[in-house]
Image (cartoon, rainbow, N blue to C red; front, side, top):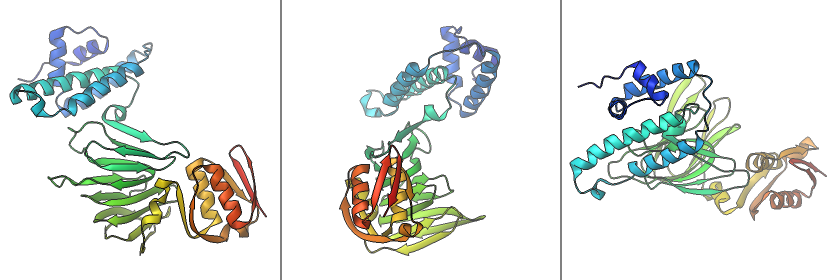
Length: 328
């Protein structure tokens, strides 16, 4: 029987005036995705009518999300009765989801269903996702993934910045998908690759396995199947380039705080300093920006990298806070 939940009852819930029986009806009603959409619409309407309501919900939100995450990650065998487990899990997830939604009046739904990993300038972080996939996130990057494993599309990630992936292959062959801001999507089953997704370009280097790329080149949609050693890049104008590299290792050297230069220009290094350390770089002589160098070097922070660049190109540099000037 369909739970008899009305808009008035939902508004009473927002105001905290439901009886235990009504709260139980709300839990069952919210199990339907269609009802969840209605819930959000009514929530917005109620907020517009109750603008005087001000609450500090951050602590409540984080607590309820942690509880829901712990519940969703439990295994059925941890409960003696499978039937009891399914009933308990369904009702508990619905109840905790309701609690999360209630605590999140002014937060978007993304905060409830998705978790974001971030790194600051100069920081590298290693993350193990719930499916066993290993991700190393480069500096000034973010990765958004579904918070709960019971979501239908739980193996999807959205990347801003740069990351190295070692995707776990699952017995049911469920694909892992990575999306970026520039209509660039990677679909894999289990493989190793590095993705670069910043404003100046999107790039993927495949180390092992096989991946499929869906992209837009201009107004045309395209699809490409990559093999190990392929490097595919998409510039801001939507032009796709594909080439083979003999050794993909230099493209993830940043994981060990190393810089692998292969005819790398000073201009390219200026981009690295801006993207990884937040520095604004000025090159006094435009011709200097085109000069290149090669080699493998260690640099653990911005100062070490600045000293290295000045030595390689025999330049002087002056740093004032986040502003750096290179000159001869």
